[in-house]
Image (cartoon, rainbow, N blue to C red; front, side, top):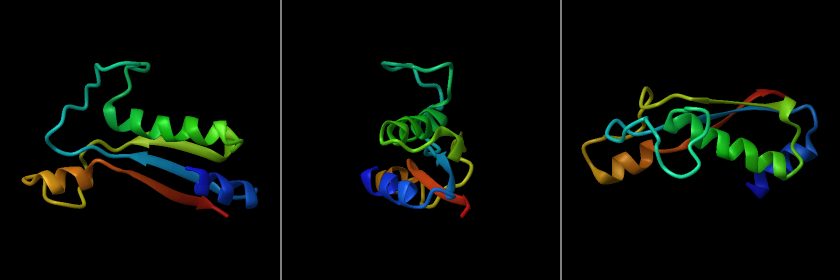
Length: 96
């Protein structure tokens, strides 16, 4: 997070999207501690990163976040390793 915040703060015109993902096995319904506004799990993951970057002085207006659920897997959900790879955050550069 610190490295991303440094990059963002060094390049004030940079805008990003933070996209959370989940695997195809876990539930998108998060009922654990600090459930937030009924967000699905993948969106909650992205929101956590968004909030951490705000604490590092990255302007909110330069970031968006979304949850993609299990719609875009990068690995096989039939294995524990694949599931772990599919539970991820992606940072997409929108504007420089």
